[in-house]
Length: 251
Ligand SMILES: Nc1nc2c(c(=O)[nH]1)N[C@H]1C(S)=C(S)[C@@H](COP(=O)(O)O)O[C@H]1N2
Ligand SMILES: [Mo]
Image (cartoon, rainbow, N blue to C red; front, top):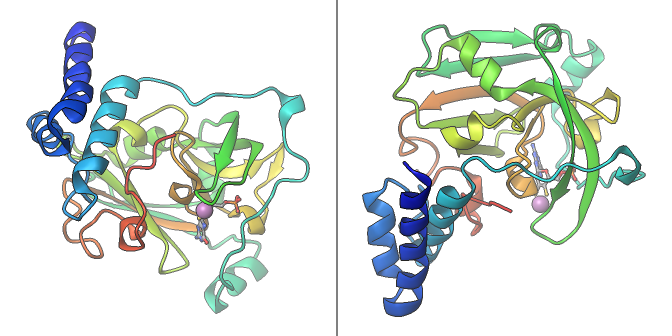
């Protein structure tokens, strides 16, 4: 899509929303395939508008990166539910048996160890992680671009979303391919020059710096590439909308 066409559609979405209500904006968003999976509920049209407007404006934009002297000391770790026996067993083994499975719409389903992931090209970036509850911190995240992992597994061209799951069974999320292939989206295994601490999601965490903290799921064990989110959980795309938060949490 050309830039001017994108501008036009974005302007259309924004003015339409003001002029004649969000339902029309949703219709427009639907025409351009910009309907998020949690659009069915009461807040549906509003979520669609935010998602569509963000997508048209920021598809290629980068999350702000900070200078090393801006890194927060110490990083603030959100509380997590107790990690279960399976986690403890893996931790006692130095996480040597931790695996990241990649399945779904891929030509080569795979299961990568931490050693595999650490041997892949790495990227690091200093970004802000912000919780929906208001606090935030800045840290250097080190990891493999998710795009590289998807490339190795051979994500099929029909792919539209990547679902990612945690060893904490009730934490799972998904992102669309624009975020999945975005250069700042990392399968993170390091923080501030060292290992990723367990409190902050170690040994392996999804890091999606263009969205709120809850999209950066800790302790990830499985990626599933899919063209539909209907069959995952309640079909809303992630646990967030099941709990009243937006699936698309762009910042
Ligand atoms: N597995 C798992 N991932 C998670 C959470 C969690 O409780 N369990 N909390 C989420 C929320 S709500 C936020 S804001 C961030 C907090 O990240 P932090 O602990 O690095 O500050 O992690 C997200 N990822
Ligand atoms: Mo959060």
